[in-house]
Image 1: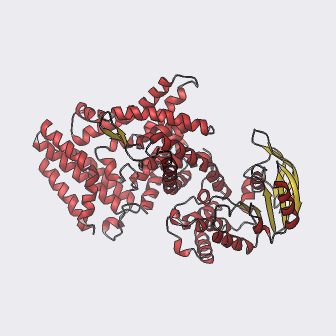
Image 2: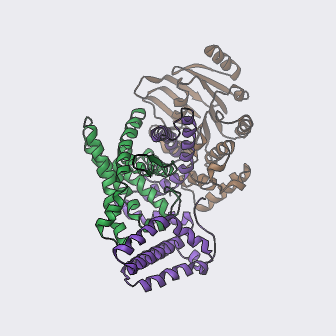
Image 3: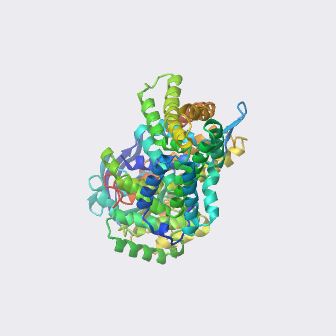
Length: 224
Length: 178
Length: 203
């Protein structure tokens, strides 16, 4: 549940996003756009990693400008490269990291780690050095690190781009089964099939905002 | 100290370890080989500055002390730190700090020679200043003799200072936001 | 992980790392106060004996000496000419004793326990602005980064092999550092996205 009001942003070298006003309430929302279209910046606005120069972004009723920390409790973020997200040497410790940041008591931390590792069949790998895991396992682990924090919404920035076909399907299957709102930036048009709504960004503006088939058609026309 | 600072500090500690994996550089003229690892000390000071660079190398030494085989040749543990070359390693954090501190004192258009002098004083001078006395104590040799022994590495170290300068400039050009 | 720790249940294994480190510091200092080559040799033998007494094979003891063997031998040789055979024995035995005692600590202490102890030891630096919880994150991150940077080095080497530059120090270091630095922005974002507050650190 996000609301953006007249949002514009730049990083000092020309506008990256201009005049974005939009409400995001649907369960599954996709974000499309060419590289440099502003889609990744848009994604980072949703959890307050980026605070817009103009306009306001609110997530679940909280402003990202004044309440970033609380927003990040509600909104999880998954990046493209799993190696950037797993910050501890083992899976167990990494899942614990986010939970400790939430201030959860040790018993709760342990029980959540158990639950998540078992749910996704990674319990056997809990203490292995992370760099020995496969790319697919790492990306799943990164997702779990976020899911364990029980966010109300998850934003993903091209989560499948670096994965092979099989792991991509696996990750998408996991995403499909999630309770929380999922907002996914992607180049993977097939992945958006079951989604409720797709936004297309072009040169920092909202170019299209419709049901997947329509939005994708317009996106295709744009890039061809 | 921002999160980015913490990440960069951790990264340079790991980079110093990774430099230990580099093949030894041949110095055909002197018939000696030099290892790339001490480049990490000077680079941390040059690229991260005194405080972050010093902390990065402190982190590195802590991990070596904890037993990780991060020194060139896959060495690690308390033994290496207490042995004859221990002083040189303990000097790493201070050397990075002093290097960064000296470089920060230079104006942006200071000559390359001054930059080199900073690297040599901080990156090499400090390391020898701590390493040689420790070597002298462990080997029970008078300071001069220990110094003469250590000085064999000086030509290689001077070359490393030049290499560091080149690396630092290239990195800063590609990644100005250090 | 890739540390020399050898699991076991000897008294050394069970002792607290902080105690062992203090004992090592004390023993190390003591060793430098002893002037008798005979006593020193006895202490070196004692240090060696502690290996089997702690359930560690003698090979492990040899492994402690091997990295410093060349330098150690050189020092002893020089000392034989400078100070005489007695001094050479003193220095040699002391080196052996030091390395073996230090090695015992490293072999009987889990890396993570050592890191925790060192992290606690760094707490006094809090007055210099070093937040201990940040220190814990930095330590774990560094360990996490080691295989990642090693992989970057390997990748860069492969790429430079095409140009015949796989042994060129500049061609290897510059791209490695740049690639590694590019990672840091996203890593920092990912850390903050999971609730880390640089002001407070993690509990």
